[in-house]
Image 1 (cartoon, helix red, strand yellow):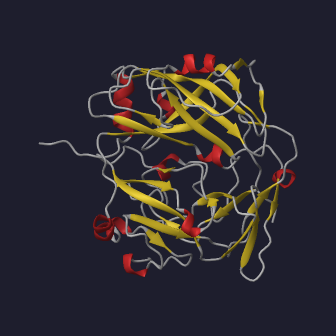
Image 2 (tube, one colour; image 1 turned 135 degrees about the vertical axis):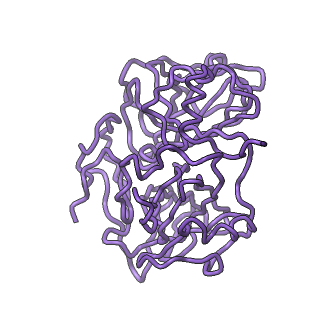
Length: 370
C-alpha cells in the first residue's frame, strides 16, 4: 500500500530522532505536527541579512560577512541582525522527506523576525530532501530588544513527504468535514459558500476582528530588553498600549507593530495541519503575521467540541498610514493533510495560547488588566 502523503505527525518526528536522522533534538520539543528548534550558546552579530551561496556553508558565509562572536546572554538590539547555531543537527533526512520552518508564536508576538539557514541552501526556512549538516537561525528584533540563552526555542520545523496543500476543490469538499473549519463569534459555522472573500487558490481568507474586549495592541519602544526565558513576568502596560477604534476602524502608523486578531474562529481538525500565509498587496501594504504554523487540533478542544479560536495577528503597515476596518481581509491560511493523526493534538497539550479570545500577547507578559 502506498504510504499517505502529507505533513508528519509527532510520532513520525520522534522516529526521525530515534533513527538518528535528527541529532540533539529533545522529545519534549516535539509538538503535534512540528519540532521546536533550540539555540546553542554560539551566536554572532552580523551587518545584515544574508544567504549562503549554493556551494557555501553558513559558517563560511559568516566569515564572508564579518560576523562578530557574542557572549552568553547577549542583548539582541532592535534593528540589528544576529545568527545563532541551533543545537539540532540533521544527519541526512530520509529520501522523500523535507522540511520548512516558521517562527514560534512567542517570537512573532515580540516582533522578532526569525529565519532558518542551512548549508548550501540559498533559501530561508528550507531543509531539503537528503540534507546533512548543521542548522542556524537568523534573528532580527524589530521593536523590542531581547536577551536569549542556550536552550531557548524561537522557531519550529514541520516535516513533509509530499505536498498535500488543498486545491480549491479539496477545500470545498473538506470545509464541512470533521466538525467544520470556520465559525463566527457566536459559534455559528461558516460554510464554504458563506465566505465573503476568496482568492480561489485553496486558501481561506480571514478578516480583521475589532469587536473583542481589547481590540488590539500597539508596541511601545521602551529600550528595556525582554529576557526570553521569562514567563508571565513583564507588565504589558509598560510595553504596549491598546489601539483606538473609531468608526469601526483603526489607524496603523507606518512601520509600527500591532497585535490584532482574526474575526473568524479557526478550527484545525486533528487530521489536518494549517499554515498562515502572506496576502498579496491587493489587500494593502502590510504584513499580517510572522508566526505561521498552526498545529493539528488547534481550536477543537480536548474532546473535539470546541468551535474554533481566533488567530492572533502580528501586523506591520508599510504604507505612510493605513486605515483598516472591522471585517476587512487581513490574512489567509492554507490547510493540508497529515500523513496520520498525531498521538496528541494541540489542545491536548494544554498549550500557552489555548484560551486566547481576541488579541493575545506573548507568554512573557502578565495578563492585560482590562
